Image (cartoon, rainbow, N blue to C red):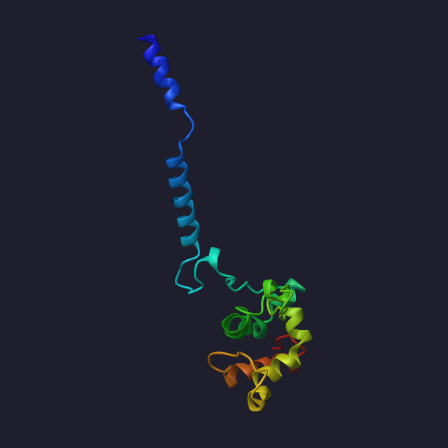
Length: 157
């Protein structure tokens, strides 16, 4: 009786067999693949280079940014809605095709004129315009972008 009990204990701690390992691996691959599936239409993360848009980073004086309603509005209505899916921290580091990181306020200010031209006059030229797909940026949003610069990239009451 004692031998049967010891034998049962040994079998409980026996190493996993090949079938168990195979089932475990298939389950893990399936779960990792599903992790990227969702309503944002980015596809499975494991099989795609696409990334979710990075959130806008507040890169300079936090108090100035927090009190800037123009920037806060533009951050959501323009940059997150139209730009950061392609122009983010990850795409800025792409060695083949680096793009301007529009998650950083300083980059937006430094490249203001180029960004404005790509949303406006470049549409007339038919090349180099942004966004390249979807609707053109609405004139009301462009006016707010221009007003933000007129105010020295700060909101004034």
